[in-house]
Length: 248
View 1 (cartoon, helix red, strand yellow):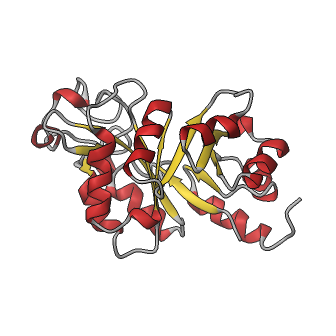
View 2: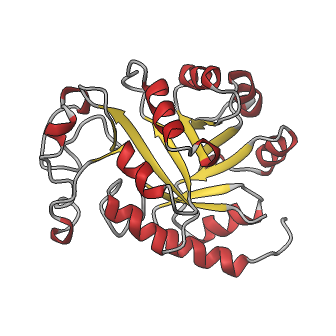
């Protein structure tokens, strides 16, 4: 089976990250899935943005948690990237779920609760995904080990990934103990032993953020279940070149 290509915050090399423009472009370029990030507003609306603060990707200042969703809608989330995208908005999780519902796309939602542990974030996000009947093609990921455990208590069958950029003595065992069924690692952590251990324990292994051709090819050849990339069009190209070669 070929590895899945997830567009990291959408096609974020060519459009402002986590906007509908970036998601739509990723879909047109042939991505298998969308990776996005979720925070909670002051009025408990899950919204898609990477940072805790709006400063980097909008014309506003302050923390997401201090805004109502209505107030966030007044911010420009596109001009920072290019004048072409002026007027792009921060979108709600519901808007994304409605858009993805009738498309053959997987969804990876990173819960951004490793710095701010939002109250009830897991339950709120889970309920929205369940409402749109998308649990079967959604993975919830987080750097927060406690959050992984919370997610598995909601539903032991949902896709839950432990995210890490750090080396563990035994990452596979740690993920298993928390109840995760997937591991998402920074590219520099990728090695043959981890691939083999993950496969033995039936844990999906996906790699981020893979933007260089040689890194894409190495990830494919080692048998990773998926990669996250800012350039899905390039990843699709190299996966097609790689084809159905035997895994090394």
